[in-house]
Length: 275
Length: 278
Image 1 (cartoon, rainbow over the protein chains, first blue to last red):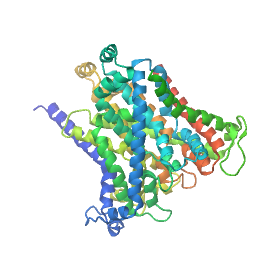
Image 2 (image 1 turned 30 degrees about the horizontal axis):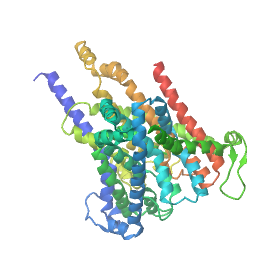
Image 3 (image 1 turned 120 degrees about the vertical axis):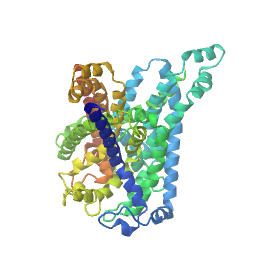
Image 4 (image 1 turned 180 degrees about the vertical axis):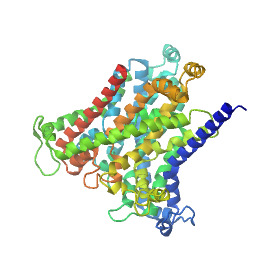
């Protein structure tokens, strides 16, 4: 082996090692969260921090012993499922129409929606909900989450529907199918995977949303991101239960995200109204 | 035929709140007390200039955004370059990279609060290991709180920049690089005169996305510092939330929200312009 080739091989190995190190450093908060969730209060308060300890399930037991917590899991699920389902039912026909006809104008509208701060929607929605006595109900929460699940669904589905050959639909129309029939019998079955990916992305966006739920929910309809704040008080932090609750909230999202790994960036680019 | 109901739904969901927001911004409108909303024209907008807390939060947000862009883009491109060549476990590392950006931000913000704790946190301990016994107090230090929040934000979103750059690197043409190697260009020269200019369009896309979200940052600030210590980490979006929904001044808050929206819009357009000009 020449000296140059050996150097190059060394450089390549060095790069791989660096990549592993960087990604492992990025995973540290997750490792620390899961480890912390199994630590007893005593292990949590020991300094220097301990990596090896006798794991305990007490923190999870404490989180779930609080009767309200399963309720919050249910709330998050109801709101995310509702906002995802309605977002898709409205978004798929819109995406179909946009994919088949002009879509530039609506693209601009959706881009503007991506840029608008969540608070710009939240202030008027809150006032409207106050007047309609809807604050605290699932209706207002689901409706508010549509503000990001709907554009996300439209944006993602336009791409998937464009990949379906238009000739298939034309053939169905000639055979006497209605436009709605062509959509339901041709487009929807052919974009099943895309619909599933879109649904998962919308579900994640809704599950993670904090600000809308903070303002529009009450004690009974609180979602998990709002509820987890309860573990951090002005003077005291319940370390172990906080880490256990954080693990319970984030792990489902991470598993779902792995299923749609290929589409994550596209989903974030098009959908998430952050802040 | 299907277009009509679908578009009507989009307009109702997205359009109605924004029109109502515009209407509110022209009124003196408080949720506290019984006074009816009163039309004040552009009075709310005029009052912004004299609102010191607003001006400070605006400047702070610009600082946060500049710091965020300056860290996210180079770090993201760096990670993408590390992942560019095939090696053992590359697919796994790419899959792991999606975790910081999908994990519930509020929950991860609180995990970072625990990690950054000045007496028990692991960050403090790690600094001790490299010989810095008394690092800054991070979230409780008025000078360090913004850089610390930028760091946590960068932890969440740099992987997204990396994945966008990664897609860009994979699509680069091979020939110019082969020609450069034949001509004896060094690795640095290839990066500086080929990779970087060819990656510019992708970097602008990443910059645009980060710009939009950095200007709007609120979730992690709310849960990690509530804008403190004092107002040292109060971003414009957080101030907006407090004014409108904690203090109930929704008319004034609507004006702040419109300014923030305009800021994001103008900054994004300016970036697109810049790309066209280049």
